[in-house]
Image 1 (tube, helix red, strand yellow):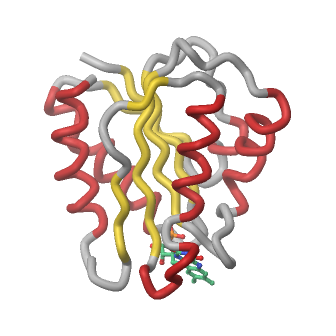
Image 2 (spheres, rainbow, N blue to C red; image 1 turned 90 degrees about the horizontal axis):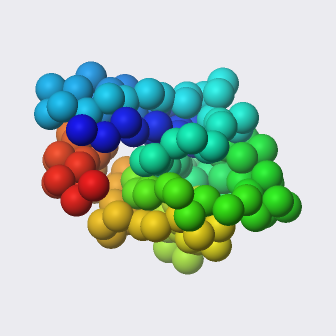
Image 3 (tube, protein in one colour; image 1 turned 120 degrees about the vertical axis):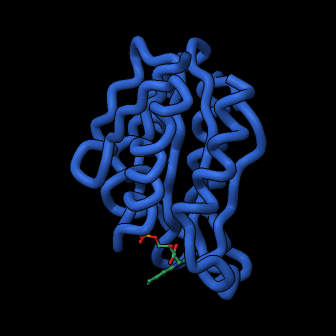
Length: 149
Ligand SMILES: Cc1cc2nc3c(=O)[nH]c(=O)nc-3n(C[C@H](O)[C@H](O)[C@H](O)COP(=O)(O)O)c2cc1C
């Protein structure tokens, strides 16, 4: 059983919806899930955590959602030792943005890796242009992802 902290980066709620769907369904597979959502993600505490799942949209021109920027800035500025942490990434985007498709998820991925966290599985990239059910895609991916923890 894993204790998973899902850190949400969202502007209009899709990433939060994905995280809530995982939080509703992963406990049935024996995992404990906590969600650091819109209001809490920026100040998420990573000490004492074992598993983090970053679930973030991209906004602007390849930018992070506002609510998760404080966390990214902290990781960038302080580069804390996160070698105790395993992590995964669900990136929400829209392929019509081409060069910046899922950029925020890619950036958070790189930040956790730079701090020594160990990545589990491949990053999921959900394209809003072709996927009307991002929460279902996220859950399908996460059901496989938790078997790798
Ligand atoms: C103003 C705006 C800018 C966006 N910029 C990007 C972008 O640069 N790259 C990308 O992949 N998706 C971009 N998107 C698409 C969002 O990431 C996508 O719709 C996502 O599902 C939104 O999730 P949220 O509701 O959690 O904020 C943008 C969406 C909006 C409305």
